[in-house]
Image (cartoon, rainbow, N blue to C red; front, side, top):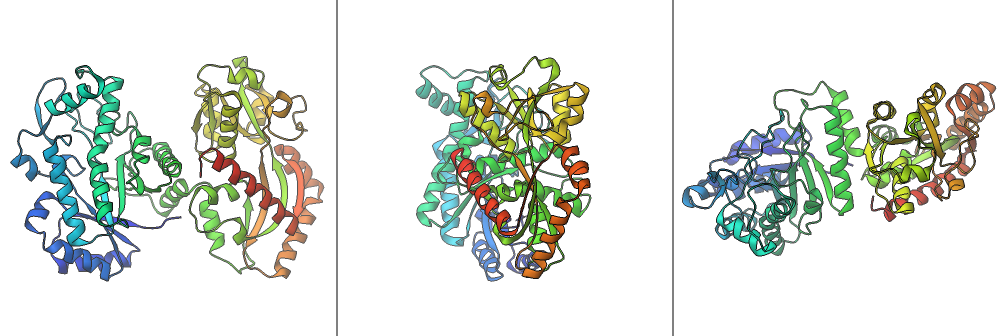
Length: 544
């Protein structure tokens, strides 16, 4: 569930102007202001900052202070007064030795300066929290942008960093990127943020600290050289409350957006943080509400939009929703503010079996052979889904690590397997029935209690020695709080449907769905049991 809708606010230091802008923000549904405060603002407009924060609070807006461009360590690349006064405390190119116009945040002088900057604002302005805006090392060569620009130079190779490295590892810092250099840079980049965040929490434990890191992926954004590729290290920091990522703008490919969003939510869940994504317009605007709705889908998880829509019509008997396992898993992994119990169960119509398929030319015939394959990768449909949970169970069963790759729907899964981009995919039988019939794919296991009627020769996972039983259910629910008469009307309608021959042949048999029919209270009890199972498994594997 979206808790806050924020907007960044830069460079206006007159209270009366800020008030007018804040009122406009409120009118458009904004609940939180990210107030950018530069070093120049701090020195020349400091008395106005508390007044601006107070005005935002008066209007019902939360305020996070963003030390925008501070030391050129944060996003914004503002002129740094610290660097003007401390010209020697700069980051140094590893390959050329050039001193760059970025503060080295490993120096004690910068750490003291930054901590004082933030703690002073915390005491004087009394914001609701702080926003660490894209902290990063300098990027000496190439340009870090949405068009790419990965280069081979990096920072920082100043005397302070070299000494810290040698003290830690026992040998001189190399000029070329190594694993030790990567680890060192990741650790040190977090020290100034951790120390300052700790100091802020000591002033006010309720201050919310957000760390917003670049979304990194070769080809679309810079990897390694900015120093924050290790998202786990950021997520694990005990002083951060929100794990946030950027960049996401409407000019970037959809699959990049989806992948980064899923990774963001997964890291936040793993470490018990809130998650956040930043949208940036740049030069290309959204195509309309449909694109924005799709963005919400990616953030909230499968089925969130439909569930939100139907839940918004409680008591109205004119709305029905087709449900599957995401009906229970999405509320578990995402803070939607409601779950399956807020709806009226009408009928369970069938079970859509989960299976694993490989390319026919792979030579793999069973689960043992699959898990013995080097660098095995499995294509699925998203973090916390049934296929993801099956993957984790297979990992645990054989103490292997399957590379799970989420795709945007069945079509992308199939395309990935056809192109040998993954070793296998976990999906439903109807997704790949035609590819099995054509001889492109082979089904090597089902995760059903019994063998499938559509594939009687395929062994179940249990028959192969893997105690894994999990499939998608297909059902129908209505809005919550409808009358008993309305509920019974739909139950009678679904019962009539289930008894027709066309339903059995044209839907169930044609799509490989196993018949399983329950209504009303029986379906409610089934949902309770399924939810309990998913909750247990997802907690076990750290998904919630």
